[in-house]
Length: 203
Image 1: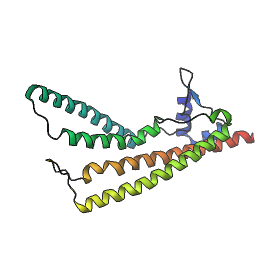
Image 2: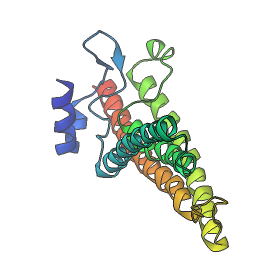
Image 3: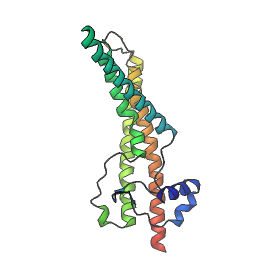
Image 4: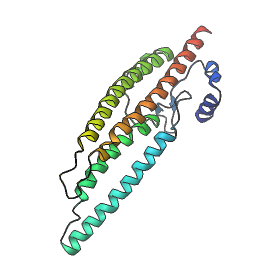
């Protein structure tokens, strides 16, 4: 039912006016979740970043397996494994941000939800996501500035690979950019939810 409402809303934004109150969707085990008909779905930017993240995780598993194999069999190490592993962890952290937001993977505190009506809940979500978007915008500016300084300085890693540092650091502004876009889409859904709740009170 929730999936059908969500698809209808994305197909026709005017459906929001016909949904005056959106209670939290109840999962099969009876627990409430954050997804509802006004929540944006995962778009191609977040989905592509998630696929890249999943591929990096698989690559890390293969690389660590190869590292353990050569250590036990030949007594030597793949010299670049630590460096590549560090870059991979940074990429996983930042590229998964937008998908985590759209798939409701982050923890939310719900102790106030039970004390608020639909309008109060809609307002609280709007204010929270607005604050999160402001923080993400500041992070995006700083990450882009950091990447630009790295590019101009031609810094390289003090390792055998001598990796230009702008390459692994590029995932930081890219990941925050995807997160900011996801938050902006979330804000649009929050606004539609609040308008629908107000319309329902007027009726």
